Length: 453
Ligand SMILES: Cc1ncc(COP(=O)(O)O)c(C=O)c1O
Image (tube, rainbow, N blue to C red; front, side):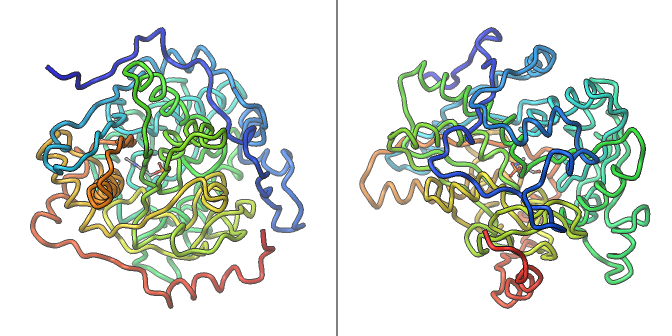
């Protein structure tokens, strides 16, 4: 019998998150205040986030202790299992060993609760009564709904309209956990009304939903905003994935040649990758690859530039690979990957060549996802299918190169609430979207006068 799972005991859960900022060989560019062009100060962010989270966002400390209250909630599903995908390996018939972290075992079905739980906790400690957020596919919104309920906070979620319509069960999950879910763009905010006036049939985007959530948070007493990806503190909380993976791989005496994840705003990929980037910075030979959709190819086609995180220009200017803040991605089924920018930390590491990026169209990703479901059993989220396409691709490269490789990747979530997208794929209704260059040029026009990083 071959060992399929590597498990950690509750007492072996990592007690600290890892902050890559402490180990970067070259410093990152700071976020800028759009009015002054100067680096943002903690005070600039205080209307949006509580101070304890702002301190972590700006922290240069290598290790940050995970509060006991957060660890206790993490233990409901963590440490997550590390699997060896023997059946998928057999199907691919190539010289690879494929290991993956199964983040689909969390109550909300993805990696998102790793960040939602500490955010709800720190807000509770800081006196916040209610959190407002946005969600793409509904994974983040459902995770935060669960986490806010755990700590006795109210929660409202602006959900990208196309996903709200495609994924009604995510809304029902949010309602079950006691949160409100509003399709975005909505009439409840000025940002939403502006979009609807110009595009009454707008499918929405993460950039629009973020604008709505921030506007409401800063204008409602007792409310704060929470972002499910992109920012440093979110990536920090997700490092629990990679830290567990390192302990698990150590237990079986294996070190990966390649570490992979799918990329929307960059949080699950960073979660598994950053502890390995640390190894790479200190001389380890490990390839680290992020997979994004070809319809929203920020890292593979966008420039590294200062840009807003949202359509209404309410966030600071972030140094990142971007397609322009008014870029509205095609309505692909991986709603969680429809974001115009990439996390500044991930962007910096791509720029410094510690990380490679690759783009895949949705037909390729569903092909890989269905192969996975028919071999390994678990049905992946449409977002997760992007890393599966990258794993297939890397496996074929190994075959061509005649090299044996160990691949480790993050299986970011299950697709049991996304079955309508599988239905569309299996009945031949999905299209392969490629982004035309003129659309990138149009969207980038909006940022041409911004400061350059
Ligand atoms: C299952 C799953 N994977 C990946 C992502 C992409 O987000 P991120 O890049 O922040 O991990 C999402 C976003 O909603 C998701 O739900």
